[in-house]
Image (cartoon, rainbow, N blue to C red; front, side, top):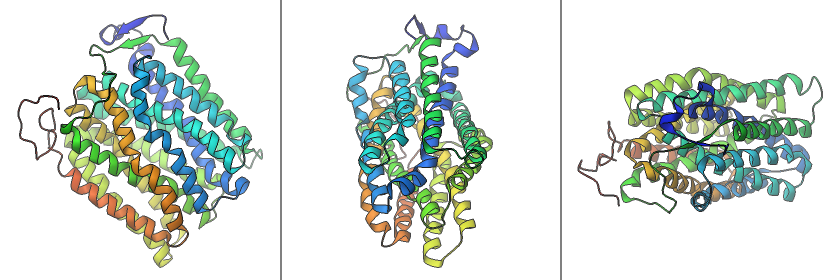
Length: 411
């Protein structure tokens, strides 16, 4: 990267493997190798090696989300670096931090290395979302984003399958698995840096803070998505280990089922979003999550068993795969130069609740775990109401059903 700069129009004449979409595919595969492996081993690692309870795991995830809350800082980096360079650098940081995770089996060590990996992950995701919306044609975006979800799921599936097959067979250590997965991601980042030219969008991105009143519904949906997602990420998997005693290979096997489902369903979801629109897709997702979270609460209230818990975990994951519909909604209503700074602002908004909720709910978890999922169900229900405000055909000047279609002056 850096040998030459190529416009998006000229990039179409490059070999397919060197075009922008090919780089997005590599990114979609490389990031989950490190992040998903870290997630799969995390609950067992912190319980076995550091003696975590719900309180410590809540604090860990609150601190892990601080870089997400500070994703708005990407705007400062845009003043000095190309987005593509930021993308690759943060992928390398995520991989390197993941590789050395097992070297710090204490609360302080785990928190420190988690902060570093989280910076890499959140800044990578902020820039990655921006480049996806800039590099993929609007008409193809739902289908292409669905395929990128499937690619990420397939990469995670390969990594998880290796863990399941080899964890007990070869008596693997946490250190070996973290080093292997993180090292692979670093190698992918180095390859991306050396093999692709710099791609230049015809409309340069604003390198200043951009907050527009007409994006209010997108901001609100991002806030609610962050709150719901964090409850699932922190407590659903933790429940499988704490309540049902899942071991590493069992948690990983559950993740494999998740990713198999996404490999098959994500491209179909992309086609469905393209056909039925973002409003229908998001209402379907959020309504489904209301049911799932209520059922999670029922596991604690009524003693429902591990089979239902595992099934709900898979269904939950499939519903969350529809989140790319929120990206395509924004792509339709946004000014192109707003995409990068708004991605940073949206990530910060998404992580406001993500920073506050895990630590607070960690204390609630030790007293009433079912109440945590009841709160998540209420959040999903509020999200249904917000999604219903999305027009059937959103566009600039028609961002919500409350907006009268008219020429829009940026505000």
